[in-house]
Amino acid sequence: MSQTPAVAHLRRAYGLITGVEDRLGEFRQQVLQHEASAEQDQPFVAGMISAFKGARQLAAEKASLRADLDLAIREIDKAEASDPEAKIEARDGFLQAKHLRAAALVDYGLIEMLHGSSEMAKQFFRQSLDVFESSTAHYFMALAYEGDYDAPNALAHYERCLELDPDGEYSVAALRSAEQMRNYKKKFRGSWGTFGCLLVVFFPAAIIYYLVKRK
Image 1 (cartoon, helix red, strand yellow):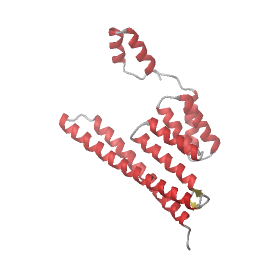
Image 2: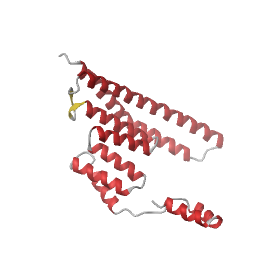
Image 3: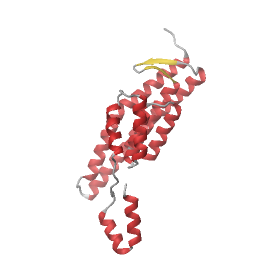
Image 4: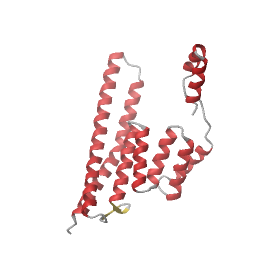
C-alpha cells in the first residue's frame, strides 16, 4: 500500500523516537554505574582514569541519543511542510506531527534529567507542553521540580497530570507524589560542617548559607 511523503516522514520520526525511548533505560543504568564507580575507594590515578572513561562514554551515548532526536525533529518538520494534517497509527492511537514533536521534546528533557541540567530538562518539558499538553510531560516536569525541592510547582504538575489522565501510566505514582508534596517540610540540605565553619568565621554568611540550603 502506498503512503504519502508526510506519512513516511512521520513513520521514520516515530521509529527514531521510540528507539531513543528504548535506549533510555540502558542510559540510566550507565549513569548509575558511573556515579557508583566515582564513589568507590580507588587509588587516585586509577580513579581518575575510570572517571574520565565513564564520563566520555556517557557523553558519547548522550550525543548519540540527541542525534537521533535531532533527526526525528527534521523528519517531523518535513512532514509538516508536506501535509500538516498527516497522521499515522501507532500503539497509542493516531499521531500527528505535534504529538511526535512533543514526545521528542520530552525525551530531550529525560536525557538532561539523567545526565545534564535540571533547568535544561524543564525547558524541554515546557516546550513539549507548549506544543501539545500531555500527562507525561506534566509528570516529568513535576519530577524535575521535586528534584529541585520546589514542592508547590511539583504539586501543580502532578495534579495536572492526574487531571489529564486519571488512570494513566503515571497516575498512581503522581497521586502518591502529589500527597507527599502537599505534606512537604523544608529541611536543611547543606553541609553542617560548612555551616559550623562559617558560623565561627563570619556569622552572617552562616545564616545566608543556612537559608539558601533550607529546601
